[in-house]
Amino acid sequence: MPLDGATMHDRVTELAEVKDAILRGAPQATETQHAKGKLTARQRLDLLYDEGTFTEIEPLRRHRATGFGLEDRRPHTDGVVTGWGLVNGRTVFSFAHDFRIFGGALGEAHATKIHKIMDLALAAGAPLVSLNDGAGARIQEGVSALAGYGGIFERNTRASGVIPQISVMLGPCAGGAAYSPALTDFVFMVRETSQMFITGPDVVRAVTGEEITQNGLGGADVHAETSGVAHFAYDDEQTCLEEVRYLLSLLPANNRETPPAALGADPADRRCEELLSLVPVDGSRPYDMRAVIEEIVDDGELMEIHGGWAKSIICTFARLGGQVVGIVANQPLSSAGVLDIHSSEKAARFVQMCDSFNVPLVTLVDVPGFLPGVSQEHGGIIRHGAKLLYAYCNATVPRIQVILRKAYGGAYIVMDSRSIGSDLSFAWPTNEIAVMGAEGAANVVFRRQIAAADDPDETRVQLVKEYKAELMHPYYAAERGLVDDVIDPADTRRVLISSLAMLKAKNATLPARKHGNPPL
Image (cartoon, rainbow, N blue to C red):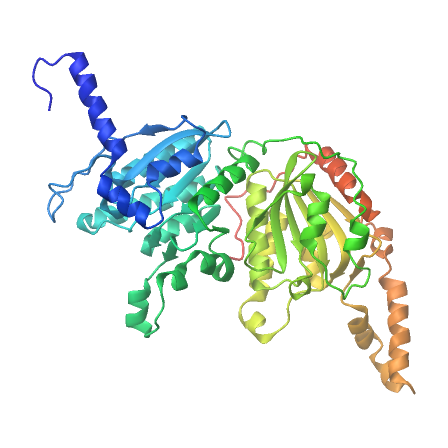
């Protein structure tokens, strides 16, 4: 401590020494962190923020707990670095667990710092990024640590739909701590070094007898491909944080703003001739919808959400004419683009998020229906499909539907049809909008005629042709005003951009209510 009578210069020198020691950290702990293939909290913040823009707050905070071996262990920061800075020139708040101090475990002072930065982010109307690498609640501080998590969860919920919240998993996240990332808008994970689970392998082994590793239980690929908890998974921290920066460039600062525009060199009126060969006319032949999207959007650039999970539907950010859009599209390469429990939930979450942050929605439809089967029905396909229906019906952002080929049954309605509020609906000349496929429909409608025919097979073929000609021709829906126009596929980009420009000032409101009651 400084001596009585110390000059201002003495005090400034002492402060500089203390802060320098905080920045350096314990060399051995840093080496241990690096040996695990992990960066330190401050190195991660350097990668996230524009150079030299990060402002730290409460670096001198220490815990006040006594007993259980903590009396002589009171390091500055208390294991978490908090502050704000610029990402691509825009203000972003963050907190980063410092695993070198108490294993990043959360105690009262640690939680108080996080609460403060979350409150500041909400007050300033700026995104919040959490860099998670912690061992959960600090056991020595008991219920105070648990209350700290409660405060984080409450703030996550209060900020939901107001500011973008991004969780970046860069180490372990176990127990109740995993619920904070689950409450945020996006979850990033790094393979091999990050894990999330409620109960770890030891507990699983003790309770069920199952043997499993931490990565096998809650690693990046598990959550990106099986559980759907993680939206993105990357091989290293540098790439992961670079992608976080890119995602932030596509999002508004808060729900009162629109996403930042970035006009590029790709002409708005560019014809997409490749689409004529990318999509087969035969509705039973698969194709890659991702290639279709790349052909339509600016410079072919996408940021796909949940790319490894529920692959029969694609949810992605992109730009059209420089404006950020959210695209929902059936993927014929996976289960023919069918809607099932997971794809319905994936798309519903994405639609809801886009609507929260004023991102217009473009829906590309080629859907044969909902996936039939006992497991789907018993798993609640009705409830999960209703989530997507609710999300679209509740969305007030500009919404445009494009029907490429098949659009059958309830799945057609759910995929943002005019009947549930889509602002505009366009169709390609290959569209088939019907209750079901012609073959199935003919078997139902003409069942008696087919059964009584001398040649049932030939009669069935003829009746299928008649059904298609009468009820499934490309202009049937347009004649009834359910499709605004049937367009040349090569004009899809131009039509979407001009339509989005027209809808830019759309003003839609919902009935006065506390909140809806979605089918969760």
